[in-house]
Length: 261
Image 1 (cartoon, rainbow, N blue to C red):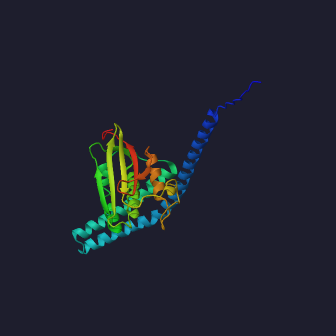
Image 2: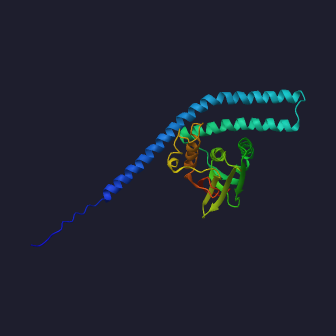
Image 3: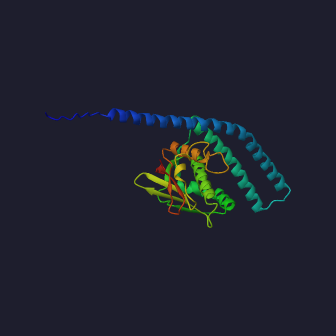
């Protein structure tokens, strides 16, 4: 009597493809949910904060005029007031731009130089450095640093990353945050913010970009989610890894563009 073996071959290609399509759909639905949620919050914040910001600007301008008329203000104090007024106006612009991006997808893209955008953030970085007692180093290759970007949104994304990095170094004896920028390939420019903090636990990697998720004892957990939304609106992707400094390293790539484009 002869022995036989039965062999059953099942083609799982369609099943694998269906699983992949389902995974892609889930990611798209999550992205839509994230944008809708942030859009609603941005619209509410813009409405609630617009009036006090406008009032603060008006009060500061009136105070500045009164002090100048009274001859009680020196050049240094006048410069400080002007910087404060500029930051209030910038806050209003940030809220309006974020509302446009998150609620309607509208943005004003154009050629911008990374070095110029980061140079404008000097006062903001100085405040973070002072408040957190952290050294912030800037290492930007400005040879081919013209990219396609929306200036205010890019700056807000970078401030969010630098602020998060500074907060992560709170327990370090010599806190350090490094902002790097370099061109790569023929068309790309990579921006990285790294720190010498404890890094991000493996269990938190998948959740840190979700709205309302935070590993901090205070805060709403919106910074990284908003930052990722900004980066994605620029055609990039925000990634996180381990820094050579020992902490976390957040990176994103932008497309280079000629200044005269």
